[in-house]
Image (cartoon, rainbow, N blue to C red; front, side, top):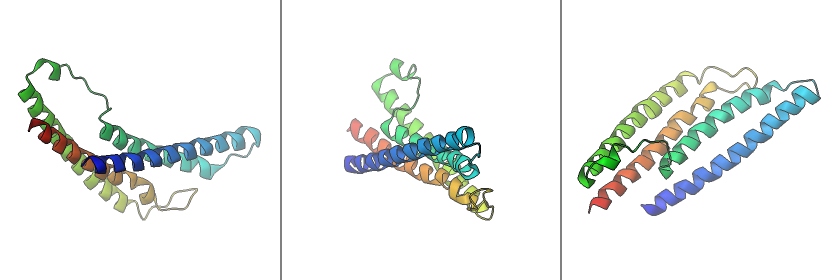
Length: 156
């Protein structure tokens, strides 16, 4: 279980670092073409917007897997260990259902729906860019399952 989490962490960390570096280079190229060459690059502007969405979605999955997302633990600090365990399980189940329903199911539907629509500058199906939603949803569900297993085994 720990090895799955470690492998997934390494893969996501690598993807996020490479994507962010590519996004930075893309935006730098955009600034150079717009302000120094006086000939803005339309394809890089469009691609940087899509890359930002991918970096955001994969970054959110990674942060969720690290359990470093924002939370307000005021309630958990005031309850017993058993109640804390129950609340953690409920929280993970709510996140699991939302991730499966909204990100995976809704993401697959929007991805399929937009496969026929082409992007203006790149000429690629928009579904390629929307596919980051169900992919990150699957990653969050995997992390969520690992979290549920961790919580369950901590009780024993």
